[in-house]
Image 1 (tube, rainbow, N blue to C red):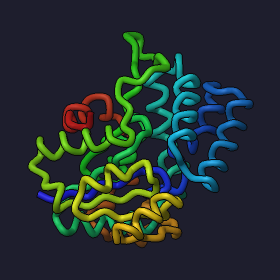
Image 2 (image 1 turned 180 degrees about the horizontal axis):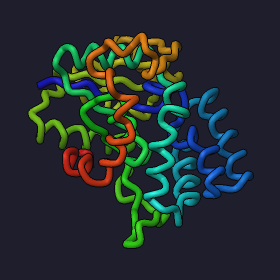
Image 3 (image 1 turned 45 degrees about the vertical axis):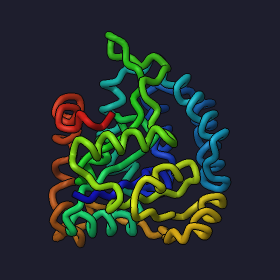
Image 4 (image 1 turned 90 degrees about the vertical axis):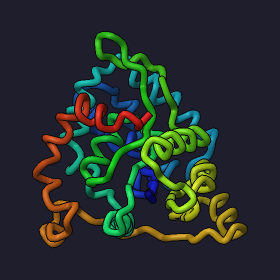
Length: 261
């Protein structure tokens, strides 16, 4: 069995997924106006300067501190309600087309992201892919975020999650594909037989040239809810069924995708 692994932020969508929901969190009273402005600034830095280990570590600490005390059920509600409004306008058409091509070829398709599972898993369902490998924030017995992380799906830890997934599902990583924009995902790209750099940062662009990895440019946007796309098999009913799929995130998805780390 072959698979295709897609990094999420700046590979499938044009922004950092966690930051994209900043305004929604503000409206729900979960973050302050100051935090919202910091979120907007972080998006600009991320967009124009790209990701590096120091920036990602700073962003991770900031987000974890910000989420302490949040209600997980409210976060899920915000994400489910915001998928079409917030995420769809950020989708790269080239990424969606590639996902369709891999599905048509009979490959499994997964989103692999350092973003929280509560964001990545619903988006994976919305895109009609097979699962999500994502970070796992710590949730206490009251269903609140503690500000800690059970598992951070970043760098070499993405590789560990992919290898576990491959072992459980009979996936041949040497025959599989991976796509990412960041040099922090070089371990992920090295793990598969067909690595692709997408809108790469300077370091990844250099490494890609040295290793003859193909480089792709994603720039066009697409709406899955666009009627012109509804003839495509695996996207047909997504807009209509998103609410149902999200409602299953806590139970059915977790059980179905036990391998999602």
